[in-house]
Length: 170
View 1 (cartoon, rainbow, N blue to C red):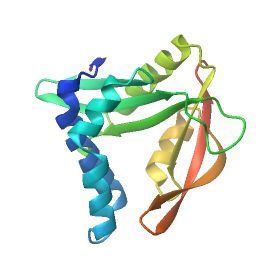
View 2: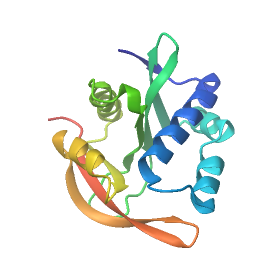
View 3: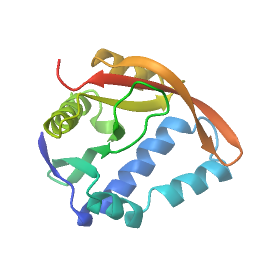
């Protein structure tokens, strides 16, 4: 496993990974217009390049011989949707499905936790869809505690999300 900071030139690859993981996780039957529109407007190279260049964002990429296969995004200054959380969010942790199950997500998570701790964050928070059992098991297995709920909105629909928090050092 090789990790490095993301560069603006990584934005197209990270957009492709985002679309692959997001659609694969949340599309259960057909692709609705709302979900397609969301994915194609949120996960663009331009948006990801802006994130990579934002000083409040920190993106770490997992790199294999062909290119990125996973990434984590840590955001500073983000208010949590529930009280008692820090202002440091793990906004994204995406691993291509064919690379899951080898410890890559856990290794990236620890890279992100180390970064947050190095910036003085005593804890981090994140949200995940309340029906995403694999992600929930992953985060709970890595020391996160469920601390509340929130709603994620796409078009006119809302979806329950669980909020998790964890100390950066354990």
